[in-house]
Length: 109
Image 1 (tube, rainbow, N blue to C red):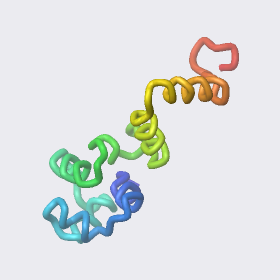
Image 2: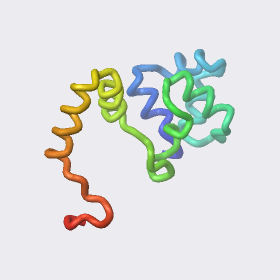
Image 3: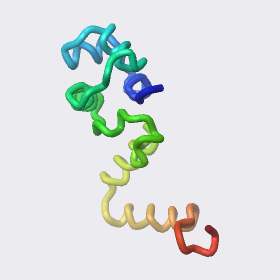
């Protein structure tokens, strides 16, 4: 796919018509943008991202956006941000044990 509009729109439970209504275009325009038949310019990216409550860069294909998040990842981050400091610390400790860092320079790389 040329972008992630359809994927994110479906995760949000929106039809093409509803998304089109939110940004002031027809559902045909949304369809054309999703399929790459119409160029996704910065204006459309901003309007669609705002309507879907994501960053404009989230609309890019994953291979073009190393910082893109899945719906589940966004939900987890939202929960972490809402947690009190003690709960955040517990979550970090659990994550350290369950998901060891395998970055550059580690013995497990």
